[in-house]
Image (tube, rainbow, N blue to C red; front, side):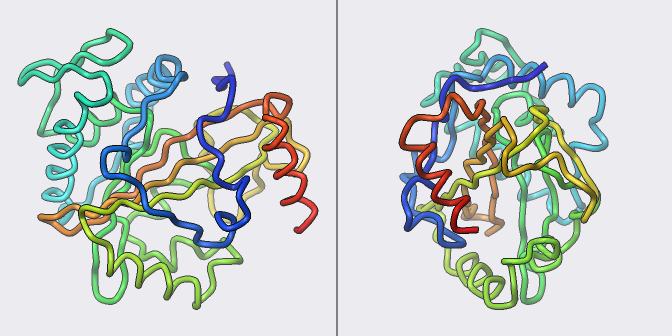
Length: 259
């Protein structure tokens, strides 16, 4: 079953300055989490994946336990501003469903609360390394292949992510302040509308320049003050090409013509 938005809730790629990689922009701290119109169906799909594929969509290295606990506390503290009712033993979601939070399973809990996936990156040596994640909606990658890898190795299949880009991104991570999230959104074209699309590196993908499904990820970077881990959250939205606005279709055509 395709889970689609009626309209894209974010599309910064319509502006030329946001297309230049890495294309990050400052984001008000209060806006780093998002609940949108597709909350209920996306959360149902997340629950299905967490129930049937937990070992594939959640991973946490031992050194990331403190960071995961800090992320858990941070998110729960921020939830009331987004329509949640938070009590010590139960959380009521915006769709009316309730969840008993489990601090011993922080990523599992977060996976049942928000549409976004959450990745934890911690500095090891000269690079940030992926040390944990809840990843229900991967866009043609797998958590198993990326866990424990530094940023440069994670992005090895991405041609644009060369040494120069890697150095700029690493410097950005190093200079981030906990009170200043950063964000960007990508633009993907798919022939398959499934939100869960894990694929091995370099494997063929259900992507096509003429694909009917336009998928965009709202990617937010937030540095946690205590552990200094960087949280990379990924909130996925998807529409049919015909449901793009006139401005979005024009921007997409301009982007495609420049490739």
